[in-house]
Each structure stands twice: as structure tokens, then as C-alpha cells.
Amino acid sequence: MHVGRRIRLRRTLLGLSQEKLGEALGITFQQVQKYERGTNRVGASRLYDLAAALDVPISFFFDDMPASDQLPGPKPKSTLHSGLSQTRKPFETPFQTGTDSVFSDQEASLFSRKETIELIRAYYRIPDAIVRKRVLELVRSMAPAIETETDPTS
Image (cartoon, rainbow, N blue to C red):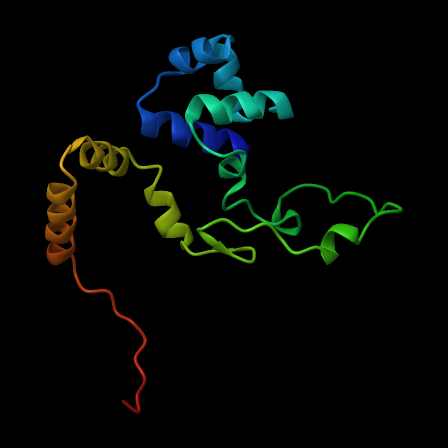
């Protein structure tokens, strides 16, 4: 389900319909819909194709994924190899440190809002990099200041 939500997020950020994505992958829009809803699992080769079609690394689909002990449902039984994966260093993305996301749940949910997606699309349609930077500065100046922790001794 998490991978499906990430597929939908990227597809909508790019402004693609399920039908257009399906055409790019050689599948029906119904199959894309099933992937996004989590009805059907996404195999490794299809995930590779999706990453190419959506212009993201494969790791994008696993960003902010909760740890397996936080997932609902039955826990897998212990196997001969259990514990090996717990000893390796977790993969990190630019938005993660260890297994913690730098975004709070509230911030992460903003990326699924239509208004956020429209704002991002409009921002990146501005052809001049200097103008984009000025727009960013304008928006930052209008937003309330972020409260940061300060050293009481300074």
C-alpha cells in the first residue's frame, strides 16, 4: 500500500493520468489503479519500469516507509536467518536519518494535498531560475517564522 501511495504521489506531481502512465508501461489504467490502491503487489521488474516512467530512483517508492514492526497485521515467524537484516545499516535517503523521516506526519501529509501539488507544479513552470528564487523568498517572507531551539546561555 505504501508503494502504491508513492506511485500515485509521483504520478500526480507529474500531472499524468492513470491512463497515460499505463500506456507508458504497456498496461491498462485499471492495473495502475490496482497498484496505487495496493490491491495488487508491484513486482521488481514492474517497479523498475515505474521508476523509469516516473523519472525517480527505485528507492523513492520506499521513502518514509514505516519499519516492519510498526506495520499492522501478523508478524512474520522467526526463520533460520532472522536477525541478519537487523545488523545491517539501514538505507538512507536525503529525507531520512536512520529510519526517521525529517518530515513529521503532518508535514508528510501536505504532499498529498491538491493545493501543494498545484503550487509545486506552478513553481517549476517558472522558466527563469532567478524569478523562481524570488518567488521562494517572497513566500518565505509571508510565512510565520519557524521557531528554532536556541541556546539559553547565548
